[in-house]
Length: 112
Image (cartoon, rainbow, N blue to C red; front, side, top):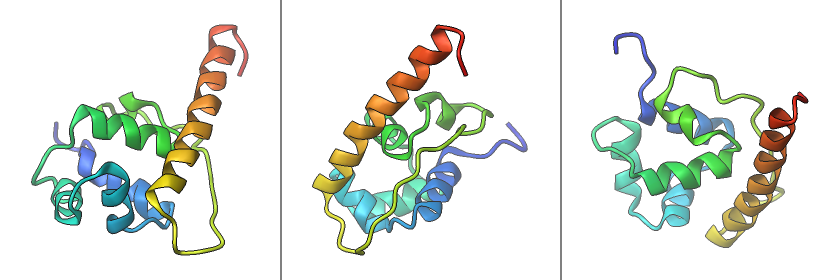
């Protein structure tokens, strides 16, 4: 396992690249902010449900967190405000799930 990026490191990188705070992620996942800090510091493990929600939010395959594969072409989103609520993340996740399903269907059909 030496040289592998740990799950918490991957979550932190995706979160920071998306300019989302630990507090926002905690609210979205329904956990305490200290739990997110512990996960990012690899002191606690994220549940499968958490990883699934995060993968959809960030537009990655859920396998990304447990493999050496890159996230792939991450789906991007931008906000005009710093006041993003958990419902906003739910809407983003729903849209991303559609985009991820479309990407997977294209791959299955032999497209890029």
